[in-house]
Amino acid sequence: MVEMHRFRKGGRQRIAFTLVELLVVIAILMLLLSLLAPSMRRAKELARRFACRSNVRRLGVIMSIYANRNNRCIPLGYQGNAEFRQGNYQVLHSSSINRPDMHFGCLYNDKLLDQPKTYYCPCSTIELFQYDTYINPWLHVTRPGEWNWTRLGYGTRPLVGWGYHRNVDGWVIYGWPDRNRREMPRTDQLESGMAILSDIVSTADYVDTHHGDGVNFVTASGSAHWFDRTGFNSAWQLAPGYGFFNGEYAPGFYDEGTSPPNGVWFDMDR
Image (cartoon, rainbow, N blue to C red; front, side, top):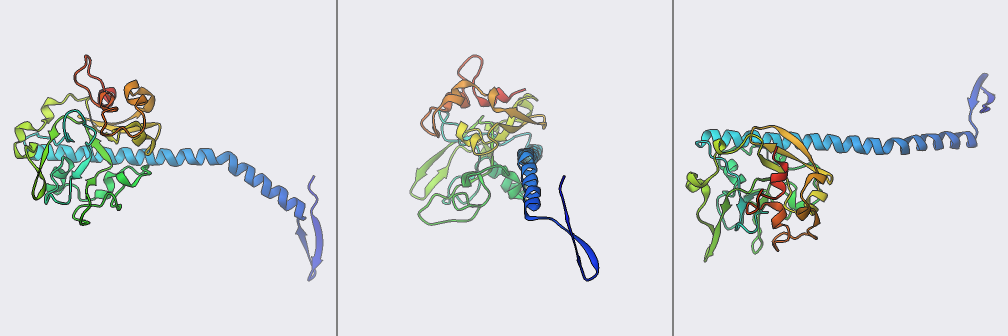
């Protein structure tokens, strides 16, 4: 039983704890906090996960608005060649290109990316996929002699290649799907359960730097879901390091040449 000491000061009786008793109370509070901390961290992560899901769902709505304005054409794709489809998250390819036409750039040109900070995952821990950082500046920020790409915090299903070539003026886009919308995917060609947008899944390491245990994604029907990391194919799971452009991740990322097709985007299809 805790004993409290009574003393009189100014004619009134007061109660005081001893130092030992105070230390006991502090220890109990610290123990309670240590027990609650994991739950608090989990609650914070769930809040971020739901905020991310709201972001990617909103991006899906914007994609639908763009399609309705443009004869059902939807800017899904990747930068580069068919062997490496992981560059599927860009708004602007380089500061030498005056127009942000790279897949998500089509949304910007239609004035649909009015709140760009919304289109980044709140769980991202790397500046590469965070809003307006030094290595990922928002549009129209140029640094002479450097690459100035603008990336969103989410990726599109890599259905169409957005090619480029180089001339004396720098990187110039050719064969853009939105210059000839017959090359761009159409919403009426997509199955309702097909995953069309997701957190960055270019490599397993990028998932580690976001939610870690899974990703949010949106289907062609507009519904948003969570996909647990354990459901991804083994080729993608086991590729070592940031194998971004060396092809190690390519078979597990998007491979239509197998039967059935293989890759994380097919894993997420519902």
